[in-house]
Image (cartoon, rainbow, N blue to C red; front, side, top):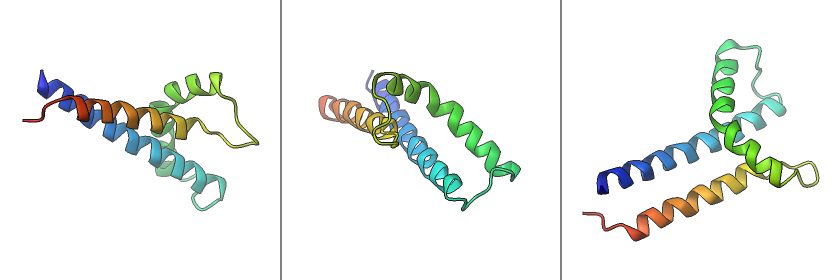
Length: 94
């Protein structure tokens, strides 16, 4: 059972990294540092969007953008961090 919780902990960590990369890529596209007409950039962006959007959409339905800023990735990262800490602090790693 410990291995399952450790796996969940690692998956949450990877998903947090994916959310962070998605946010950075979105900024790079918005500031025209990278161009989505490049097929590789488009494929990566589309993949990240499909992976992160289901959870971000649920958060956006509860908390709208504040002053034009989308806070849903920040809230998602905080929730994932909290769940990860719960798992790490309440399981005896052996």
